[in-house]
Structures are given as C-alpha cells and as structure tokens.
Amino acid sequence: MKMTKKKVFVTALAISLVAIISMGTLAWFQASDTVENIFKVSTDDATQKPDFKLDLFEHDLLPDGTLGTNEVEKNTYTKIAPGDALAKDPTVRNGGQYDQWVRISVTLKDYAAWEAILGNGYDFSAVLTGVSTDWSLDRSTVGTDTLVFYKDSPLTVGSTSTLFTGVEIPGKEFTVDNMPTEFTLTIVADAIQSDNTGSSAQAAFASHWN
Image (cartoon, rainbow, N blue to C red; front, side, top):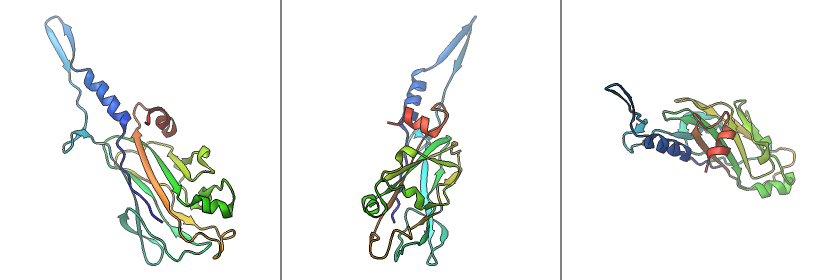
C-alpha cells in the first residue's frame, strides 16, 4: 500500500486576503483627530504568504506488524493474505496559524478488480477499521473508487486527528486464488480555513473550494 502526502494552500484564503488588503487605510475624522486602523495578515517570513499548513502522515510499520513512533509518508505491506488485519493510521496535523476544515479522500486504485470479486458498487469503507467518530463519510461517494471523509469540527492550530487505525482484507470473498496480487490506497488531505467559510467542512468545501 502506498500513501501520498499533500500540503494544500487554499484559494479561499487568498481571496479573503485580497479583500482585506483592498480596504487600505481606514480613517475616521473627529474634529482635528485622525484614527487609522492598520490590518496585518499573519505570514510566513520566508515566503510572505499566509502561514497555512496541513501535514498528512502515518507511523512506520514495524516488523511485527504494529506501528512505531516515526512519522512516514507511506508504508508497504507484503505477504498479505485474506482476512489479514493491517495497521495503518493516516493522520493530519494543523501546522499553521489558522483553524482548518479538513477532508480526506481515500482512493482504492484497483477498485475495479475488487468490484469483480466483491460486487459492483462495493463499499470499501468496510475494510477501514477503527474509523474515528470525529469524521463523517460522504455517503454520495460510496460505490466509487474514492471515499471522502469530512472532519466534523475544525482542526485547531497544532492539533492532529487520525482518520482510521487499520485495514482488514476481506476474508470470506477473497481467496488466495482470486485476491488481487497488488493494490494501492492513495490518501489525500485537503484543508480550507474554518473562519468565515461555513458551519461544516462539507459546506465550506462546497462553497469555497475551486
């Protein structure tokens, strides 16, 4: 299994910043006094861009099949058999200075091969174990090769959240003869600012994600 890592900078944030900058200096005159309000946007000193960062990682796979403490971008599983329970913990971290709405997409690259054995429109969320109650599955994505999960509350600055803790290979329908010899789970995390974008992650992405 392979997992990719993606850091997403949000266009909705850029749009809001343009709106702030275009306001320029606001001044109120009272008699001979002038009051100026200056707005400064939090930036990364190195790039002069808003400090908005999302990290996606999992922990290293140890020889005994458990997970270690080192953060890695992917793990490879070998000698898989029907019914195996595999440890895997895709986790997101808010490394920026803004709270974020987050979604995670999980794509089964060899979905057609699974469908051929498990049935058309197979819901492969059934193989994801330990799915956190902090996340909700977009049911409209069930029956496709990509499942989308939304975090129910904003991912606050400095915090992490793990989507699931393992993958269980179907043990009844799969056999050593018909099981696909290789498959890949590709996991992508997207983030958008939670301020001023809506009351839920799904609403924020629907309204503001390009």
